[in-house]
Each structure stands twice: as structure tokens, then as C-alpha cells.
Image 1 (tube, one colour):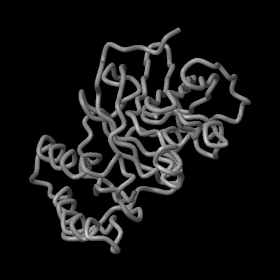
Image 2 (cartoon, one colour):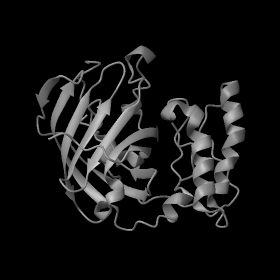
Image 3 (cartoon, helix red, strand yellow):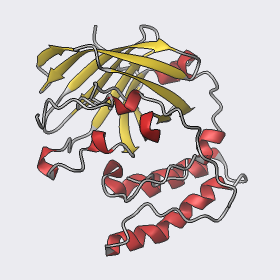
Image 4 (cartoon, helix red, strand yellow):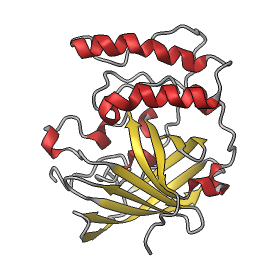
Length: 249
């Protein structure tokens, strides 16, 4: 899961005013998107050869990636195993700058989500540790409407403690903002999030005004990959980078 405060298209079929601006979603740059779950059901595709257009049709780069998008229809092929699907997923999202270079959203379920073997992720120790955000459809998290130098250009991490039900979002360059939250399980896959503190540039603590709340559903989990669904049908794909790391007390 990725943490955020009260405050593109998915390259896959499947954590003032610019710095202190709060939005309706919880992320570490003060938008709760990582933790909110849409009430709409996930869409499924009955067409095995659907091409996903999640790149802008106005640039050569977009045209190239629209061609590459046909790879995502393969994610629905039942004969492919999890490792193959993960390799294709990683290759597909690698050039997309965490989703900032993708085009209009097209929220399709990933084949990996259907193959999830961890049915109760909130009871699994695989959730513990520091996760790096690889891809999201959340524009409020990526801040794509800002000039690039005002966006979170460094890596974005989220840490989960299953034993203490604590979570932490951490931006790196250039702002180093952080957010911590308490997690309240709703069921074995879904959690409610209540943010308590934010830290500007990683140093200045600000108590949450109480509006930093959201929900997150974990739809796929293994030792290296986590897929989550938030509000507004946003998708989050994260990889494990340090299973020993814990949210500081």
C-alpha cells in the first residue's frame, strides 16, 4: 500500500501551495490515493485481443507505446505463468516514469490479480517492509500538472508494519515529504487508513487535521510485487526493496 495524506493510463491490463496542498486523496505528497478504494467493481475483458490505448495519439512516443500496448492483451492468456506475467509487466511500465509518461487511463484488471495466491494479505508477513512505487494511474500523486521541477522526481516509498498496523510514505528528491498513518483492517484484503503526522522536507512535523483518511485494497502480493487499488479506480504497482525496514516508532 502506499501512504498519503488528505490530500497514466494503466500500462498494464492488471506512496506547497505546491508543497502543502491537500487533496481528496491520501498520498505522501499529501494526497490519500494510495489508500482509497473505489466502490466500482474491477472491469474484466471478454476480448482476448483488445489493444489498450493508454498513450497519447499526438506524439511519436505515444504511437510507439500504443504498438507496445498489445503486449497487455497477453496478460489475459491463462497459459502464461506468474513469472512471465511479472517480467512482461516490469518491461512494459519501465519507460513510463511511474505512469507520468502514459496517456489516458484505461483501468483493466491485471492477469496477476486473478492469479493472486495470498488470499489474506493483511495477515501475511510478505506485506512487511519498504516498497518502491513503480507505477500508478493517480495523477494527484504524480503531480503531472505541475512543472517537472515541482513534482516528486525521486523515488517514492511506502513502508508497512503488519504487527503494529502502521504505515509510512516517503518521498525523496526534491521535497523529502513523509506521512505516517494507522491502519484499520476492514477485511483480510482491505484496510482503512488514518493519517496522524506529516513531515515537510522530512523534518518539520505537522499533525494531521483529521481529514487524512482513506482505504486501500491489496489485489496481488508476493515476495517482490504488490498491486493495490485505490479510490477513483487508481492502480498502484510497487516492488519490495527492503523487507527488514520498519516504520520508526
